[in-house]
Length: 210
Image 1 (cartoon, rainbow, N blue to C red):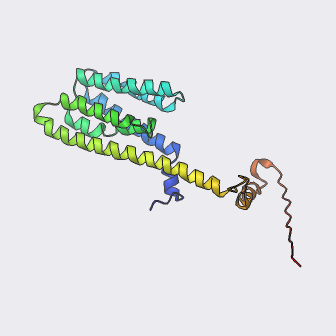
Image 2: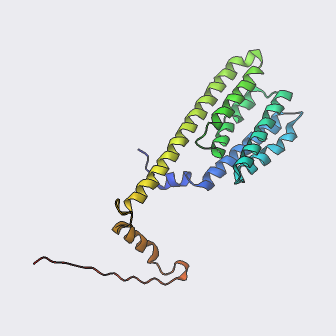
Image 3: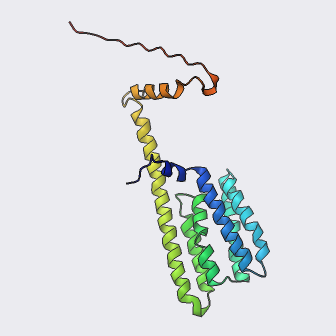
């Protein structure tokens, strides 16, 4: 069972870690595209620019636009100068995973993988067809399972937040309960935080029945 409170789980769930992996994957794909092409290689300098804009922008429409333009660039370059099977095998397994970071819990990564497979299978030499099919199956399986796992991870995280909020309030009144009170005290009792003073007045009412 996955321990969602473990430091390792929290680390790999951070935005900084995911973005770092995304940037490394984009760098690997870009290097492969530039080195494997002779005619249009240097045009792929535009690919990481588009992918980084898609990652950093907060506008969903702009993210979709730059992500699709970057992918279209790969398809057009592949039509002009097809890649060899080794370059496709080493780099393009990472491409749908980049779109998984951009569009989590969506079918975009699977669509990208399908278009990528269709594009290169149709243009693959006859002698490399079986190897291309084998790589295509791997690509689809990795993309499918990664997409499903990301979807359920986000559902799990949302459910954990819901349970945590429910545990800090009364079910009927929705007012903070004793656990929420002690959590608030633990958070604010350190007077060194923001150099603010903190005063706690606690009274206990004890009633006895005669």
